[in-house]
Image 1 (cartoon, helix red, strand yellow):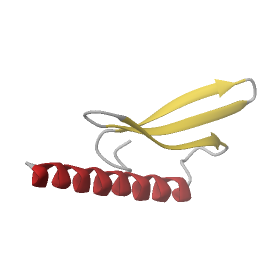
Image 2: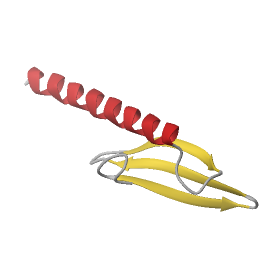
Image 3: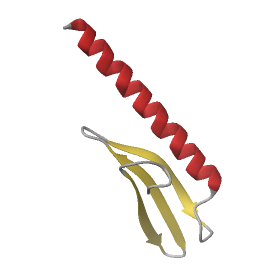
Length: 74
């Protein structure tokens, strides 16, 4: 889902009368679940997009700091 970020996707699940969405990011060493929500409108709610962007940014921030610490140990 490019509106959230590079490597982000949306998995669509239809269960009886309910449609679910799983927003996720594919990283080199992980699949990061950004959000799971019940789809009730045509467009993805802005609050979901905003939350996913924030979570993705936090993931990148944390993994970058871990890589920096590992590099400093060498």
